[in-house]
Length: 397
View 1: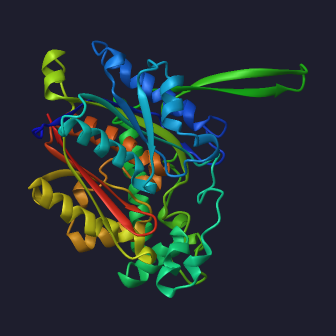
View 2: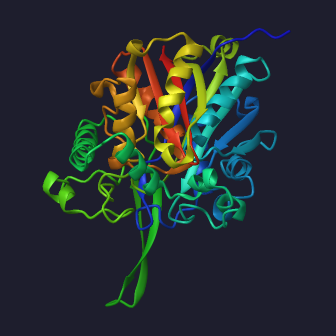
View 3: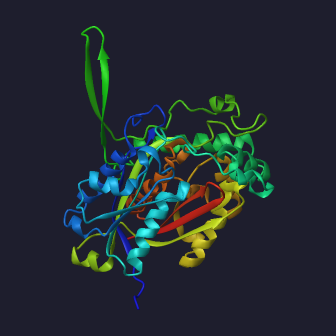
């Protein structure tokens, strides 16, 4: 009988996050972004023989077209990892990247593996928000299932109404997200976690009659806007309900990006004399009504705290994905989350939300951030489409 053991993150990186559909990664394939972070995270542990990686788990919310055909395995091969390294794509919508970390950690914790990679990738420039598939008609046959068909914005309106979150509060939260993200960029808070990605763009020179190729390294998140103001946010019209309060300004940005982490057992940690970034402490998911999917963390966070035996007041840093300001504020209110601990470097309203990659990206943020700030426990949590929430806890080492 195998004994439960700890799983440690020894390396974690991500791309910068680009704006979709017209940002820096608009023509970059998601499997290319994935291959880049897989190769980059391996370079961070030069003593680790790539053939020792037993599996690569990759989160992707819309695993079709350019990010279909088991993008995990394709990314593994494009990254130059040995043929012996397997790959599996997992999908739990917005928590897919965090689920990948949990699955990889569990393989190690149960003794089935000793070296794993967890990752996430998503191109919202290439794949539409809801993919290219139609809903099952049975969704509309029973009233209780109609919430499945609600767009994410409409669920945010439902949350805003039920939790009485005002337009002013949403806009103030959005403005704070941008200001925190800009301050973090100014202080180079993301430098340790971002591996630059080189993009090439063909630019016509009409005078010379030639097409020049311009190359640049992308190492800065594209979403934070220095021109965001309270007055500007207040002028934006609701986009999901005629008399609503949810706008493009207080919603997360559609984005492109990828992230990856290497997890190992304690035995490998000692054998290779590795210094871990963090210990994976635990993970939980829970369900809520689809029409108020944004409050999923209200159900998931208490669950992960209970299973790990860690108290909420022990959590130093909370990465709460800002799908919408309305749902983030509702979650913070009901759980009594300390605003000073929530998204200290800004959240998805400013930094972007590349769906299935977000959990993997924010894992890089929190594991590097906890160590940099000499804090102990961090949590990554998010709401999930069709009515779920997810939460994972990490302990800095």
